[in-house]
Length: 289
Image (cartoon, rainbow, N blue to C red):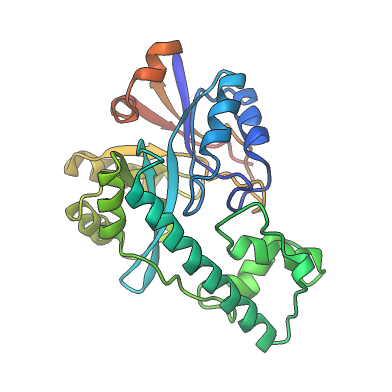
C-alpha cells in the first residue's frame, strides 16, 4: 500500500478554519493515510483527533508546532511522536499560552495606536489556548477593515509592519530538548520563511534537530532539492506537509501535496514508528493553479 502522508495541519484548536473532526474527515476523503495535526503551541486536538481518525480509517500521530526565537527571528519547530502527557511538554505549553496571550494583547494595542479599533466581540479565540495573528486578521476581515486575511498580514501583521510584535518565547535548543525528553523528534518547519538558510539549519542540527520540513507549498523545487541534500549530508529525516489552515487563501487543497511512502497499511502501519516510515518517502508537490 502506498502511503500519502501530511505532517503539517491546523484545526481551529489553533489558527485553522475547521474543527478537528472536519479536518480529519477532509483528510481521509482526500486520500491521506497518515497525518499529524500540528497546532501552534498546544496539543488540544490530540484526543479528539484520535477518536475522529479511528472513525475515518486514518492514522494520526502526535504533533505540535512550537514557536521559538533566535538570531532576531521567529523559528517554528515541529515536534512529533512525543508523549502528549509529558510533564515537561505540558509546562512548556502552559508557558507558551501565557506568552501568546501577552503578544496578542500587545498587537491589539499597536493596532489601536494607529487607529484600528477591534471590538472584543469580533475576535474569536474561545476554541484555542494559542491566540495569534490569524485570529486578529480574521477579526479585521469581519469588521470590514481589510478584504481578506492575507491583506491584514501584508498591511499590519507581518514582520516589519506596524502591528507586528515578535514572539517572547524559548530558544530552539530548549524546545528540541523538551521534545526529546518527551520521547519525540523535531523538524524545522517551512525553512523558506526563515532567514539564515543553510547556516541556520547547520546550527539547529548541531543543537539536536532531527529533521527538516522539505515539502511545503511555498518551497520551490530548487529549495526542496537543496534541503534534501542537506538532510542526506547531516543524516536527518525529511518531513513535509501542506501547512493547511483553510484560512490563509491557500491556492491548493488538502491532500494535493504529500509525502509518498511505501507501507503495509492497517495495523502494521499504525505500529510502525513515524521515524521509520520517513526513512523511505518522497515529496509530491501540490498541483499548480
